[in-house]
Length: 66
Image (cartoon, rainbow, N blue to C red; front, side):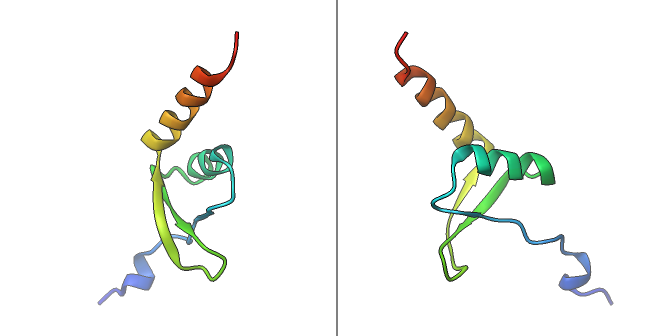
């Protein structure tokens, strides 16, 4: 019988103070569609996915003058 630990991948996360770019790079590097967001005690406080990353990038592009 296999255990959950046998099937799991390396844990990957992003901290809340990291940038959207950091989150995207980590998702890309590990081929993930989303990441848990953790606090300084490694408690999960949220989740960010690729759609939210794209939304943040588009909003930033809209806010850029020019």
